[in-house]
Amino acid sequence: MSFPDAVQEAWHMVALSRDVKRGSVRKIALCNTPVALFRSEAGLGALIDRCPHRNYPLSEGRVREGALECPYHGWRFDPDGACQSVPGCLAETAQDTRLRAQSLRVWEGHGAIYATLSDAAPEQPPLPPDFGNPELDHFWWQQGTWRGRAFDAIENVMDPFHTNHLHDGFIRRRDKRLPVDLVVTSHGDGIDMTIKQTQPDMGLMSRFLERDRECSVSRYYTPATVQARWEGKDKLTLCVTAIFTPATDGTFTPFARFSTPKGIAPGWLKQAAIRLFLAPVVAQDRRALERQHEVMTYFGHPRFATGPGDILGDRLHRLWKGERLARGAEPPVKAEL
Ligand code: FES
Ligand SMILES: [Fe+2]
Image 1 (cartoon, rainbow, N blue to C red):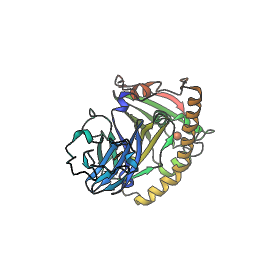
Image 2 (image 1 turned 90 degrees about the horizontal axis):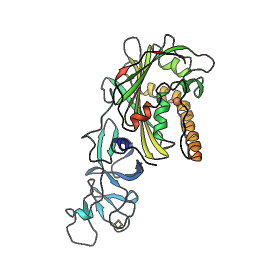
Image 3 (image 1 turned 180 degrees about the vertical axis):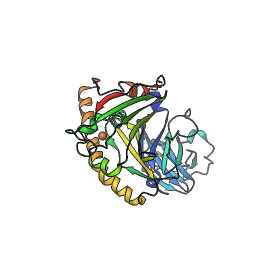
Image 4 (image 1 turned 60 degrees about the vertical axis):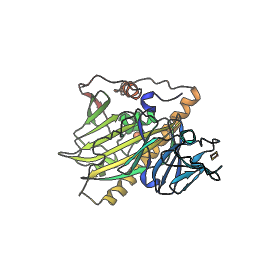
């Protein structure tokens, strides 16, 4: 199994800036490709985790004089992959393309590091709305690499029906459902679902965090980003951008960016509250995605029955594979959440 070209060739977030300090190296995986991510005084570098000399993993090396040094014979590679030096040899190596390590393009901004395996990817990663909006307080949340498939995590976030059940009491409730209107809008390269409701959710988190909610919108931005926005009477109350970077076929690295309007409460307090309320919800989703993946692995492949609540049908999967949808809003679907 491997990833669709549209996923394989895109930009993906691979780390938080704060987790790649100067002088440090991290081993990461991106779409089944091991990568050595490092930061030196010469900048940020992402090299395929294979020394071109005798194939030692570069991620086990050290950062020396602006370069990543392979532990085996000590060849040093610049962030762009050029072989800066071969110890013991006086030859000039930096211009010798045969000695280069394979490098990935990287982009850094708003506390995030992105990388792409493809030369065909655009100049910069496309970012969702408000990602760097200075009028909002932002914070990042990262919890390592999870077992499961990135695609199933995207579907999980886009699916409101599991929230009553799996997250009973936290987001919504099993036993007290509220009438809602669900409106699906296709945007060609993305899709969103708006949940319109007149009463606030019954879960703890909703009561605390989004008292004046009128509607919430979850939108999928291909290939691996979902942004959920809660809108109050006249403005945004909370925006969560979740990014699910495919690491391998059976693992992914989730990143979440929380954005809230400045001024309601100090940033650190909002951050503490959001973390406190979301920690159990995140743990429930993590476990569900792991268990789902175990079963799919056992049976060899996913076989999904699409039920009446799966109103996005197979459209998320079609977008994931790089297909485009006809644009337009659909009539509201009445449901209880
Ligand atoms: S294997 Fe890396 S320097 Fe020889
Ligand atoms: Fe969930």
